[in-house]
Length: 266
Ligand SMILES: Nc1ncnc2c1ncn2[C@@H]1O[C@H](COP(=O)(O)OP(=O)(O)OP(=O)(O)O)[C@@H](O)[C@H]1O
Image (tube, rainbow, N blue to C red; front, top):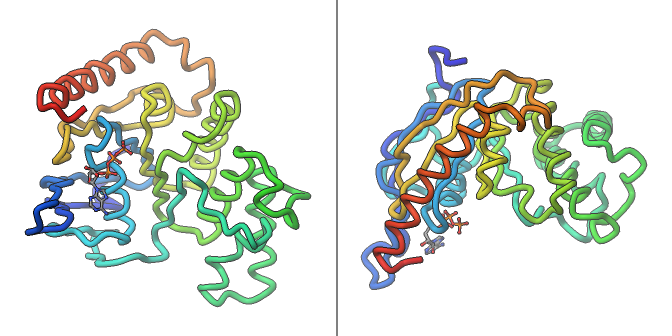
């Protein structure tokens, strides 16, 4: 899948919170990687290693203390319409309907009323929420709320989707269904996805590459290619190579968590 021009290229990113203060935290340490169009990258690493920090830095919500981020070869220094986030806790606006939550970013971009109507309904259908457009978030299940979060991110038509543990607040069965659906969407809509998860199974199932991070200050210590063709289905999970990849990721994590214990941080 690797092509010459990365859609996302981040170079020597460092993030230090509260720099120079007694409570200084060095969250990211020289994190670099290249991501190519259409890739599905999962980031996995021990708790507190800096995964969310990395995602928020790539989105432009956090300013790195040092390092550079390029999208299609052009340096970026803040948020932009080329990236959209899907949050773990859905981050929907409770006072807005499903329609208005999904329309939010399009209105910010000052799209015309008819374009907003057409796009919002397209993405509502895409995530299977037809008929729910006038409902409010409290009237939806966790899985449905996250469908709204996904539709909202797709609606602004970003090149890169940044997903921060999007299924961790969803029950196990819905999670498995959503994993398959996200893969279908990603292949159909040709998005590049950066996905944080604590689930080894989810990372292996979804990704063509997994970035394995060290304990804090987080670094990418290994890039593991998952050489199983798409489309993947629940049957994919029965393949022997699937289990091998899971063991490789698990062995990495076990090693890092042991290091965390030895440092007295876990
Ligand atoms: N705004 C902040 N100010 C100060 N420290 C922060 C801030 N945000 C995160 N941290 C610290 O930076 C480190 C990395 O946090 P981050 O949330 O990025 O890790 P993570 O790998 O996503 O964690 P988890 O797996 O538990 O979700 C942690 O020690 C955290 O306490």
